[in-house]
Length: 613
Image (cartoon, rainbow, N blue to C red; front, side, top):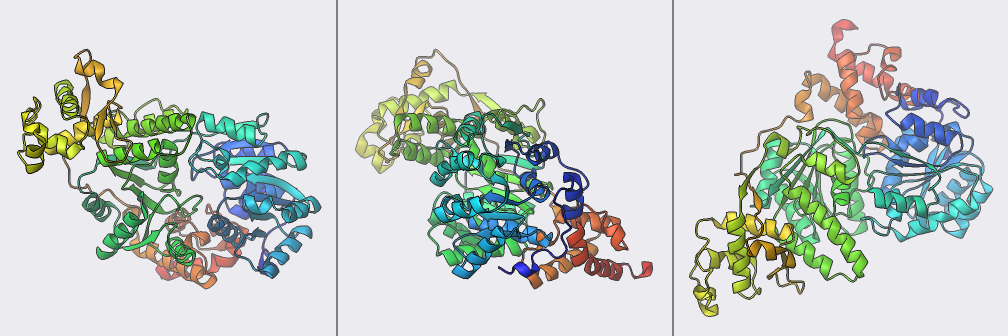
């Protein structure tokens, strides 16, 4: 790493006020809610636990104090790609930032270590396993450290969805560096996980800052899975053609197949999963970050900490295992606060597959009970008939008083129907056929299909044969899906897909309870929801500014958003600054970026409006 060119433009911020650093370095006039309180707490030398939604500005909570306090701020980050991305962005601001990770050769690592020891770094990023090495701990004891920031702190929770065993060793910071302030940050933690973070990182007595979990710019939509591939293509074509997005799948094979499908439809779609060579994974991620309109099709191995602000949609073709996972993955959309979509299709096989995986896992009974609770909460969100956002926020202990108006159940309220008789028929059919068959066979029996398999089994003679001809096969699939989702039926844990009765269904079979089911809506043609580019009133000017940004980014080998976010470009386009002083008033234009890029953008604007020059 070249330390000669890290920060020639950066003003001396040591001892400056946080507000001065925010304006001069980052180019913003005011902190977001809670940011200022967190920053002043850390600047004062006190510890903190911070929960903010993705895109809520967590990074500034430790970056600003690291620039104000004397010494180097050490950031523990779980992924190499994340730390490299953040370091590149900070260097664009003139901040002396570096990382220590396995991508560096011996000399690069030695140069970084020397820069730490000689006080030439404002921020140093490293993974927990690197920090815990005796050599690194020795260096930290010798260096002047301003703070420790533990990013993605939910990774310390053994019951969380992203547990990393190396995080458990970070309690050494409280013991060996007790005088140095520590801040733990995450976007995804329910009350149980928050308590575990505080306990494991010795932050029980620290002040806890909990921001709202709401991401109002994200529209949440969940639909029954009919033809998942067609549904996905129709959704992207109608609403997000040309946009950057992420598509999540459960298996590597499905990732590959979906990427090929989208590629065949004319989209730039790249796979990402743990089975790919590391070079290809890195190359695909790099293209996603640096090119416009790239879609990543991935397993959950992709995305933690991705800073790309203009991801316009996150699509799930398979059901996540928990609301924590769903919230974190959908939170990668719309970090720039512009309208974005969290879209998912799910069906009965998703429920069966996840329940089978859970029951066949090697975890103990306590673990399985907890995972069942998490899966039940995820299924509850899928089948809910009221506002999805209210239910999602309630899970994290956040209250939204009124329905949001920006989820599918608010926009098109679902209908319900008295499914008591249909449910009794379905449950009775499971019982009469010996609890040995999957949903397709059960529907054939209920609808009276006289196929060879039914004739061989003799089930045309059972009392439930043909009693469900009044419902279509699709309607019966909806009934069975809701019965499994709500715990009245369970999948055979041996993995053959047979449905079995649970104790919960006894009152229904006896007629002691009634049940109302969600009526799956008929498929509608997508509405063509406006994307961000359609909100631009001057498309020629917008494309000119984007071309200028892309050219500057390519020259330096960084993603375009590292130069300026779309939000900053929007403001530049709207205000049409003609001088560097006017450009400096735009949010996101700090001192270093003004000196580096100001003239290039003013020239671009002048070429758009020659009469004003």
